[in-house]
Image (cartoon, rainbow, N blue to C red; front, top):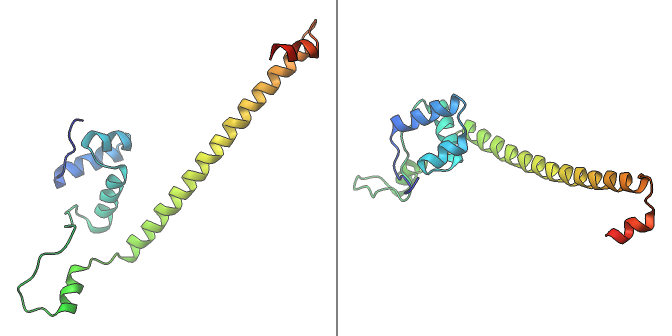
Amino acid sequence: MGGRQRFIDEDQKRELLQRMEAGENVSKLADEVGISRQRLYEWRDHLRLHGDLKSRRRGRPARSTAGLDGAAQLQNSVDLPTPQEKALTKARRRIRELEQKVGQQQLDLDFFREALRHFEEDQRRSSAPGETGSSKSSKR
């Protein structure tokens, strides 16, 4: 996709989430519309928790000319995470940690498989009839 899309309306979000739930590759969906995979997961979780996909404004809240005092105005502008959102964030963090561990273990496993393959090849070469250990070392 050429340019990044800045605003995705609620209907487009729902369509993407339906495709995601239907089993489409999340990375490909995210690339298709120019967003991160994490954003798709955030939308899914927000929909499950709140029942809608209304965008929350980011950045500094607009100045209010109403007669609110500073503390009340601050309280209205702060969107505190619910316990469910906190638990979800913690679970996501743990999943990322575990995925990293699995990735590292896969790298280790690949390394040892390759080492074993080389070792087995060397064993076959050294046990082949007519070859000696000295001829093997001269080939390297």
